[in-house]
Image (cartoon, rainbow, N blue to C red; front, top):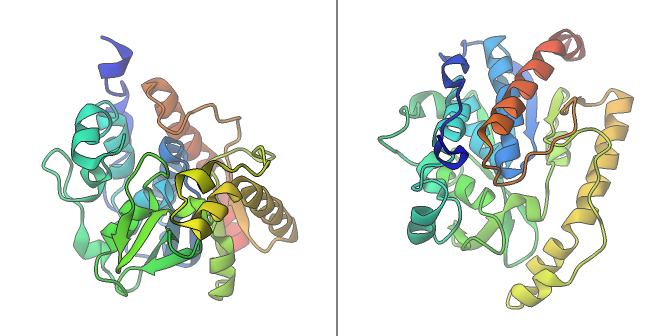
Amino acid sequence: MLLETKKYDRLDEIPSGKAGPAITKGCLVLEGGAFRGLYSQGVMDALMKNNLNFECTIGVSAGAMGGMNYVSGQIGRSARINLEFRHDQDYVGAMAMIHAHSPLNLDFAIRKNEKLEPFDETAFYNPARKFVAVVSDCNTGKARYIQKGHCKDIFEAVKASASMPYVSQMVDVEGTPCLDGGCCCKIPYKWAIESGYENIVVVKTRERGFRKDDEVKNTARLFYRNNPEFALALDESDARYNRECDEVDELEKQGRIFVIAPSEPVTVGRVEGNMDKLGDLYWLGYNDMTRNLFSLNKYLK
């Protein structure tokens, strides 16, 4: 069978079931990265399997998409969507371009879909669990933090959070055009600190020490000339990401936050099609978190 048309061979090994009712004090912070988000999905499944369900989850892009399934307590749901349907044309490919005008049809994974296991909205809307999706405001070039229960449609915010610049249409969120939250804020640890959380767990999708080429480019200022503030933020996003990574490293050294990051270099692309690589990244996240459970529980106490 051709690589481009197959599903992940080990789908039946992905854990399933429901997270327990216990709620853990603190905030889970989820970086984006498109299909690199499978690392975070592995981490979250390991957390749920070990009854660690944080009272607040904030996610950017793929982090928001995976985070909604973490808040709904559905173990393995995010991973199964991506490992079973990565090569489904309704999700990624020709039909996605027709229906969503984007390489990824995010509604496929976010909205009700007969191909997917039902999303547990009752658990998701439990007021004891806070959920925040980070979006980039295309008018102001600033990050916005859209909270479940405080907006008309949190799923539209999740869609905006994961809508990649250049290849996706802007998404209307509460009357404002928005795109990928990572354009303005890739790791929203500052929001968690400023919101008063003492226990903050940051899940990265790149290994420790990874940094981007932070040369400021002018690509966005040409492409988004009608949105100059957003264009400037996008052109400077790689340099901003590097500063965020430096600050995360320092906060981790101080013991202020707990960080889970890939224990191996990540070679998975944003729209990776190699199912073995995607599956391996999921298990890397799952196993990294499992190995760090003792340290995490020590930090939380």
